[in-house]
Amino acid sequence: MKAMQVAALAMCTVARAAQAAPEPVQPEGAWYGYQTLASDAAAFALITTGMLVGGNVDSAALALGLGIPGGALYFGGGPLIHAGHGDGPGAWSSLLRRVLIPLSVGGVGAGIGALTAPVPKRAREVPVPALAISRNGVALGLQLVF
Image (cartoon, rainbow, N blue to C red; front, side):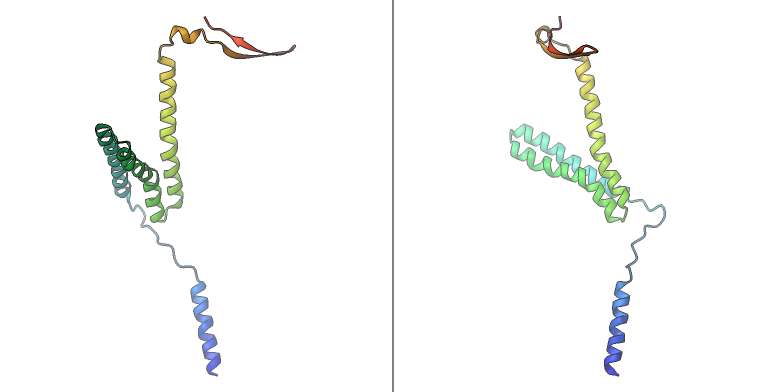
């Protein structure tokens, strides 16, 4: 009889443990953006301090010692804060924005710089590989731009 009671108690304990723990639910409209803003401010402070102090002291180690943690905090801080609040899709969205926006802005800036930069005369005289495709065949050669 005692063994049956222990077995029943064990089954109840196992059944209760098997129940999924309720996920913490954010109240509707709960805003935790100040945490993300604080994380971003700390990241930019580290990066800026590394650039200023490391550049003035001519110490690459100091610049990297502050810049690398600042970059890691920028890329990881926001997504980790979203994940900590139970917002998985928000964490992925934040990470995607933090990677794609700087890359796209840098790409647009590089494109504008390449289009508006003056081309030295000697650079125009460098042979450029060219590929011509027609109905009769394919030709590969060098093209000179004058």
